[in-house]
Image (cartoon, rainbow, N blue to C red; front, side):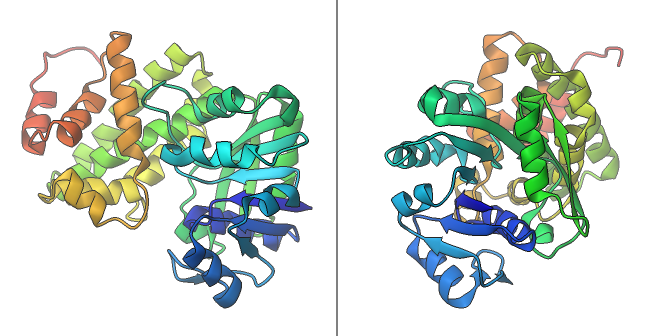
Length: 330
């Protein structure tokens, strides 16, 4: 089967390799000609310096990419998602199945990624929408290390189709879910707590503090699940606690890395300038904080991370602010 991948970053190419290993034809679109040339000429993932199959082809021509397949896998940061959709929409003439593998919430609108697609793509051109999420670092997937994820869609048949596309009995297992809201929320919110986890490690606060962060982070995530009408059981799944744990504990996590650097004394601008990949948790933190404020939700960890990121609060003061809150039952 033919699949178009929109976004030639590390995660886009890791998933392209999975699809190629499953004998699918893959065409990758990226706006960056340097990335495209590395794929076509050297057959490597530029960001990770890893080999990729020679039958994965790349292009900077969006029209060619859209016309290649009726299945579009989007793997672009939420910051540029609307731009990518608008560019692709110029060439969509028949219904397409959209798979999204990026994670985030739009700060200006509080919209989940599926809602952005539904808002922008006319219903007669949108065949279906599936979110692919779970604990899955690109650095490991591209090496063929064991990974288990969830394909989530309000249409179970679409989720099963994507499950069949990606499922690989040697290293890549895919479950399905019809709780699209829960999958998208888990994938987005966990990045905030990964930033906080990096801060904790950067400040040398120890494993006890990190375990407490993950546990209380689940509590804050559950409040969002309730407000958005997501299934609370999804929080205990791969797209919830699974993704939260790996992102909060692995040095592969770009959000963890960013938090670690800030914990070591770098400011936000300096940290972002030193990163080669997009840190989605920063925009998601802004969105989650503003949403919580608008709904009068108590989110102490998210609020503390927001203060450190956007108001330059000293991480030690943020820690003391959290620990100094009034005592209460768990």
